[in-house]
Length: 111
Image (cartoon, rainbow, N blue to C red; front, side, top):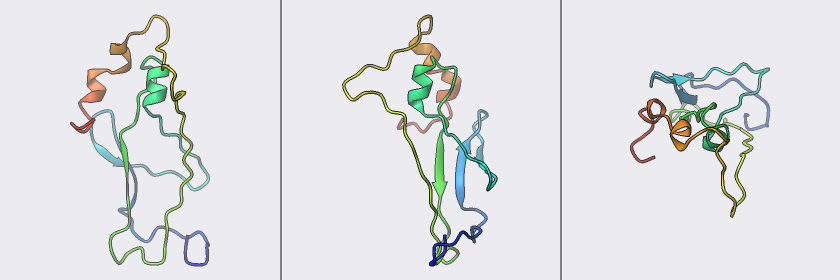
């Protein structure tokens, strides 16, 4: 949005949402303006027994001087387990199913 709250194209083509592909490549996610995107997190990964895998991601802002007067707006809704509840793995699945080593190798070492 610009200073008047109107939608404008991003002035920095390198800014935006980046995801790690299954091969470990960092990719800028190009989401059409008439679409909605869903990012799968670890809660969905555990609840599905690893059928869905969390997407490592980050948002890169505009470079200094390229995005003056422009903001990035997003609306995130998180699926969270109950604070004192357990996240149950589906029957027939194991913890190993939810945390596949092939997926983990693309995560930062601090995760």
